[in-house]
Length: 278
Image (cartoon, rainbow, N blue to C red):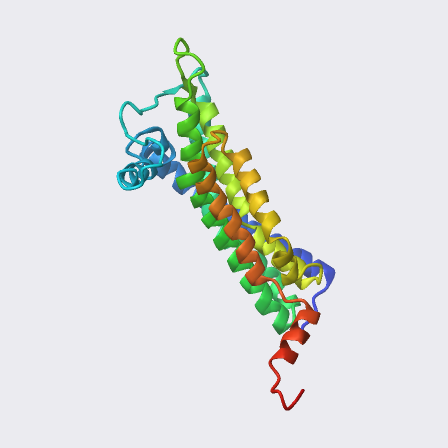
């Protein structure tokens, strides 16, 4: 139900202003918290993929004992040291990392505040759908970031840092280059995992139906493979396979969430009727 007490434009503007103030205040508080925490977790979390002790490398190393076609993930001599060539890079990385983590952990609260702002203007049925959409969108973004951190970034980083065009060239990676790729790949995966939400919204607008996903399922497999090939420059079958799976699963999740075609629903209803009724 809509709120019976109709608010004027200025009342809405005032409410939106306080929504922004609460979001900014929460972001500032979490930024301070992460400024305190970041120095203690920087090596163990952000720089963790540079070492052979990283959980993803150890998992595939153990799996390689039983699955012969996996690439060599042995931890021998894999311990990359960061190179800093600018005086302010470490300090700016400290600030940007703290702020990035603060934004990430503020997202659930931001979605809650946005829901609280628009919720009263919706009918009961609309409110239920939007509430699920906000919750699902926030959850999928976090899942995408985790996939980027534990799978996509480590695989790409390990390949690029171990690739040799010539044995006379020594690989040295700068801190700002590492952080740029770290943030970019994790953000890309977080955004990519919002695709089911986008398809759900398009379905509610009547622009797309479940039959679309059945029709183009083969194309989705090829598209997921091409996207994985773009994301992972290594080109080896293992990396392509590992990255393609979560990308294709987004297609299947989307197909499950969207509405059926009205014509398709009528046909199914007729098929389910008893023989006497037909």
